[in-house]
Image (cartoon, rainbow over all chains, first blue to last red):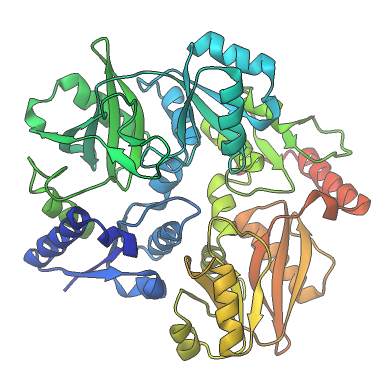
Length: 292
Length: 229
């Protein structure tokens, strides 16, 4: 009986909706005659005992999840998220360079490296992108390390913090919308579609309350994937094609009737009752992909 | 084309990382940096070269893999480099059951990239796990500690060590192509085993080291090697 390892960390079970989704994966696998085991940090060295690895812990080339993914890949196992997808999606500078190269419709983006962090360059960025701009650390995820700056002082303040970890940052034109499209893609095919609503008075899906550590998330509204505009589908699939053939969540904004990619995420959030609302078969499709 | 953050004395064309990142020069690229860590400028040079379609030494994949000790050891072992068995875990119990004592412990977390700790009993292992696992938040990579660990600089796979260690240095370069790095090698029972790899700080580069790196760069350029091929 083929065995799937689902690499998770304790925090994956802290939200009941995520825990329910993980159980749904397990049920789907067992229905297809697969064994499905949760693999924690303690058992990483047991990866070789499985036929496929499904990573649900947060991925980044510097996280343990990359070690699991690359080990599985080197051993010839099928793996979601594969190491190349983690490398590209885990670094937004990498991703935007590829979008530029392959002409993927995207939000206007500039790069800033530590050595050119001076008044002239900052002025140039504001001249080209307008004010405010959005500064993104390349390792951003869950709306973290993405901040807005409308003047040179706040721009410098944000960059100084982000430069502690990365020597290059991405700066984007501020593009406020009521919601971001989230298109779930698996192996070049649309898996599910949602609208990630932006909380009132905020500009990103997950926003901090002033003075508090709590993050407030906007609502998730699932849509039937058959009803989405063809051009949205095309833009999502084009963006994924420069990353790989795995499982992705593409964030897209609609600006003046045009669809532009915000980013492609590997390891997309899948919460029971949210992303799966209109596409209950997404669990079995992902399991099938892992075991074919 | 050579992109370097180190002052080289070579006739080859050398440009600094910031200039290269602003350019679209499509040429085989030799990226010389004392620190190739992920997210640092040395990494971005290789990334930019790859996106431009340039053959580049070192590749981004090799930069990431060589700095993650379990992947370094896995890939090195598969290429025939002598290594000892290792465990990636956050469980003290598992380490004791499978490896016993003494052990050498390397960090596998996003924040630590240099050094290691050794442990010859349970309390020392807990201390090492607490420190390198950042208060038990991350897993660590553990190997048996059978002899002594030697740390040395390796430039283009060359080092001034004994013959067996020189062979490991050369083999690691053949697999990962990291031109400038430090290697940790364990010598036990008359044999040498690769343990880890880490960046070299600029202060650690002597005049002699710079001359050696420059000579290697000139040699590669003269040979017309297609970097990254």
